[in-house]
Image (tube, rainbow, N blue to C red):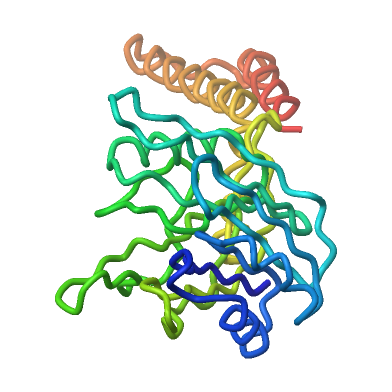
Length: 286
């Protein structure tokens, strides 16, 4: 599926005509918008599709999602807030379900510790294949358990002509990104980012309490073999111990004969014990 995210720059940036032009040019399956104002409610009248907007408390803008495909009404996930005096109104993430994938449309806080905390909160609230997409307001690398940064690596935000930042990102779980690019900025101070995302097959591990998502076929086959080996490990250990016991018995009997310098015991006396060990090993391997 093709996904585009764009921070519009409220009031003075991109408007409904710019968003409609972006849709006509790139034809996304899902468009996620930040700093979206009320005028965008008229978007379906211009380009069709389905549109949902989530206002943010104390602001003239909010988060919005558009798709040519039917969408279940998204919901707002409240995010952690700063406890410092003078903090801005609380932020939310807009949770959108498209097919089997859950998207979190975000415009995170500027505090670098706070926005990492908000990301962890979002990740814990999402199940299955998921992506957190939008304006992270984050500088530097981000570590999020189970998620991979699949967005473009180029700068996306240019507040001045001197320095640019990579603020618009996508962290994904259970998804493969075949193509990520930064699109033309237009009248906003943020570039849109475009992503081609594909759902990865699931692999249930051992007791079915954990799930792995593996992209490459050869690697996926290897993980499946590893999962089977893990589940069969107790049986394999018992079989190996039985084989070691058998070899140890043969070795001790051979050393005993050499020490006493006696003729080897008749095969008929040794066969029952060795045969019992070998039979037990064969049964364990079945």
